[in-house]
Amino acid sequence: MIRRNKNVDCSKKEDAHRLIDKLLPDATWDDLMYEIYVREALHYNIVTEGSESFDGQGIEGVTEM
Image (cartoon, rainbow, N blue to C red; front, side):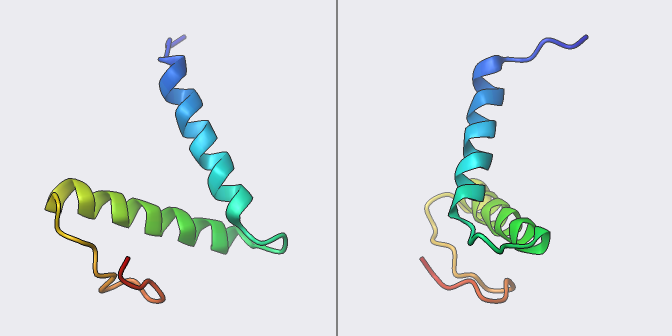
């Protein structure tokens, strides 16, 4: 059995719950996957680009924040 840092797991679970709670009541699995994709794309851009802002290019329906 692998022991994991409970604080890290708990934080990720809380993030997942917050993301799901933001969805509309009739949201589909595709809606959830899209939200996860956008979240990861934003995170990846922040990690790789530093302080440059994300412009949403290449992700349909995403506008500049």
